[in-house]
Image 1 (tube, rainbow, N blue to C red):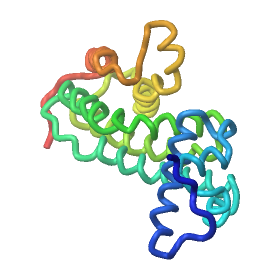
Image 2: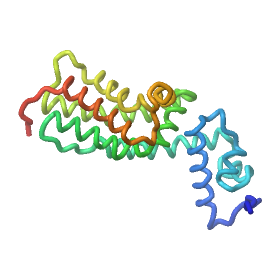
Image 3: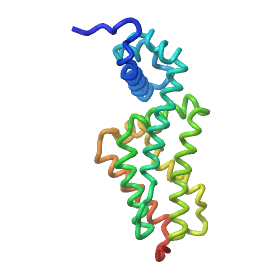
Image 4: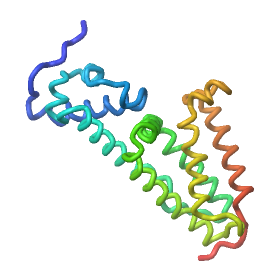
Length: 216
């Protein structure tokens, strides 16, 4: 038998848990369907609480969206930092390999956050700016390190290379439905994701890496 959501304000000991549950439900549903397609009743049902409790914690849908965005930005910034932090490579080829491996191990495992980011970029462009800027800064610092230690072909601009890497890494998130329709893409199919990663990595290694001795 389905338990009815408790009505009224929860005890203080439960408030943090219930607030977190609401945020998790909101993030999950916004990631699946976007912001405009989800209403408060669906979020409250998923979290097992009343709509009134959402209004108690967040005032309205806009307040809940703002809190969900802040939560996702914090999570993604932490992941982006892990992906690009202190890559210890002995060559430009190894650098690209390690960066790709970290994306597979850290970023692509947080698919729900990336789907949330997709809807944020499409529906609320102004609010998506800070997280894309943060990712650009993390990734650009590694591109500049690659250039310093091993060089880049003379016609490759580091800033545009950074954006190109972002396109390669995040593009499939924005084209999920198209990839599924054209080539049977499934976000849960690890073989397809591995093939995509290997292909992108090889293109990058042979297109941008100039091998030379690493400088200490």
